[in-house]
Length: 369
Ligand code: OSB
Ligand code: MG
Image (cartoon, rainbow, N blue to C red; front, top):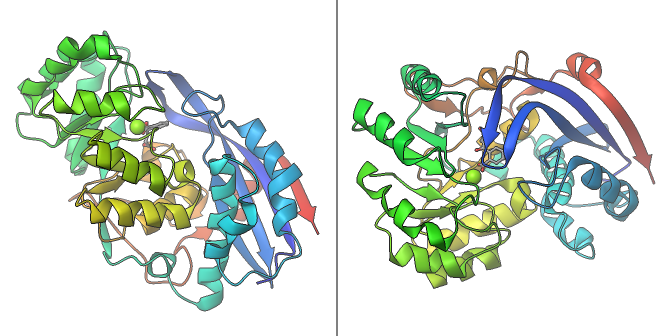
């Protein structure tokens, strides 16, 4: 595949409902899409960087800039055999994993079309149906949160994850457990606690959580390993896992018993597959995280979730939970038993709604060799 041109777009996509984590509230996503043009094919990728550098150091303006100045020029005009060759071509640039992932995943997307195989099979996936959970943000009231959980359980989702932070934790979890004693329940702190909070985190134990996601610092394994020794509840790492090496280090230290894989956070499909394989070797299950993606990133998350060690329901849920209208056709839909069935069509298995994308686009730039 010859990389003839790369188009960057920013879409303004208001969320159906705001999403609040311990680091802030989001009402609309500035969605960055990348299109790789090659031999008449268009491969699509999504850069999941946030509006601000709060989840990680990456943010949309920075990602756009590093792609224009450094990453795209390393690919334009080159003939590339497969998406797996992209990390090697971009390795000179340190970090910027979400920006790199957008490009790499777009090439995988084009490769699947070129080879006429479903993207999930190209990635090495085996499940043809994936298990879905939901991530529910901090709400204005406990009542509103309980109402949302009720709605998602009725829709069939297999696991409920709620965001927590000091002041929105023990009481909230107690109310959820009192009402639903048996559901798969987890919480995500997005680094809202420190080791001084050990007594507080120990109060989570009676709620029989499937996991506590990223309780401590976003770049830490050491204190997580100390914390894990003092908790029955499994720790899951999200922010701290940036690579397969991180995964091995964290698991050797005993810093987690579950790993959240986000393809953007680890720099693209190649690294995500390696993270998956390392965790599998440690006998540690993984699940696919989400970054409030549009249909492009969402369809890629669906494909990745088909790999064998994705053994827990992910944060990959229906388009309509986020968007009035999604940019793919069909939208991502979830069955009444909380699963997404993957498509057997070549490529990502969802058409790109170009007219809708045109309407939502607020910035566009095409780069050529
Ligand atoms: O920590 O998993 C997270 C969204 C934005 C940033 C970080 C996280 C999240 C989510 C939402 O939990 C997952 C989703 O529904 O896409
Ligand atoms: Mg998380």
